[in-house]
Amino acid sequence: MIIRKATLKDIDAFIEIYAKAYEELKDYKYTSKSDIKHYFKWLYKRDKEGFLAAEIDGRVVGFAAGDSNWVNSEGERVLEIHEIFVIPEMRGKGIGTKLMERLLDYGKKKGLKLAELWVGEKNYKAIEFYKALGFKEAGFWGKWLRMIKSLNS
Image (cartoon, rainbow, N blue to C red; front, top):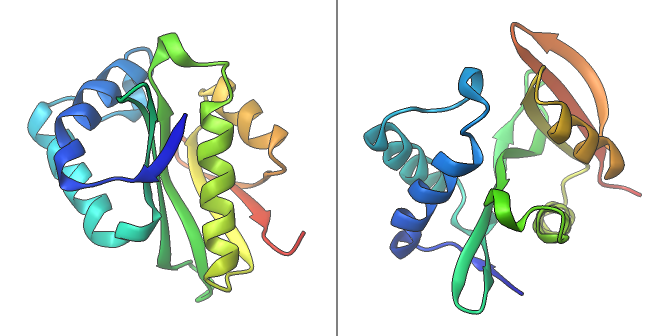
């Protein structure tokens, strides 16, 4: 497996994998191809260095987008994890964990002390995944659960 920076050439793979990864999460996804494409471009503009793709045998199988330019509601610059997903048939093989480890290392290299993310309150598999990586629940907003992790450990 190779973890590399995502590029604009990855947009079609992103759209395809995003749609498959979010098939069962209707409450939390973009539904049109144009919206997903716009989301990819927004993530890419936010922080090109923190936008990652996972590849196996030349095939992109997952993405993660961390944003080291984010300022949270307390006014602190944090690593905001906007996105992480793996194509369903490749889940359980450590791909998501490797993507997340690279993002967390990226945040540390940027001198950030905290990683934060939002996850759908009914996305139980993702919540357990984040907890296994050391994230803690930090409040709700509508249908979204806020999770945080110190980058000092």
